[in-house]
Image (cartoon, helix red, strand yellow):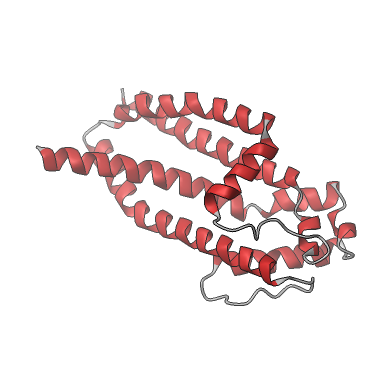
Amino acid sequence: MIKERFLLLFAWICLFLFLISLSINLTISFIPLYKFFVIHDSLAKNVGLTSNQLMKEYYHLLAFLNFPWVNKLNLSLDMSYNGLHHFWDVKRLFLINHIVFFSTLPVSVLFLRKMRRKKQLWHLILPFKMVMAALPVVLLMMVLQFNTFFVDFHRILFRNEDWLFDPNLDPIINALPDTFFMACFIMFFLLLEIFLGLGIVCGRKNL
């Protein structure tokens, strides 16, 4: 009995971690979001590049952050030691998220298949509703106090101050405005809400 409860709790944790990591991966991979800011805010001018050149820089940055076999950040823009070190820290976080995604994927699929087979998808409704109700509150607080949230977010995830870029030494920061990061967080919350909403719809159909 205790073993069954532990396995059930483990499956629920894996499911939520999977949805979170999936939302993060989709947000990271949604290149049109950054392209919008490049065009709308004329970010390329901030670093002395054309829009196409800046997008190529962004592709190189994403490749470095996402792929473990890419060991060198090939940017044409200048980069300080601290700036490069910060991107290595971000790369580790990205890779951890990928590990979480691929490790929780099979458990989540098996868990959902089991509930579907036993016609128990309605179990998703209550926990998903609770999380859906909390997310808008968190999102609103984040948007209203984004600067404070962004600083605290970095202080929690990073044990150094390499994330405090000097635009003279690391001009890439001029092409990564706070508004872009805010949009990324908003997109993450919206995706998570959508996935939870889909779970609730499936649960109601199951009823």
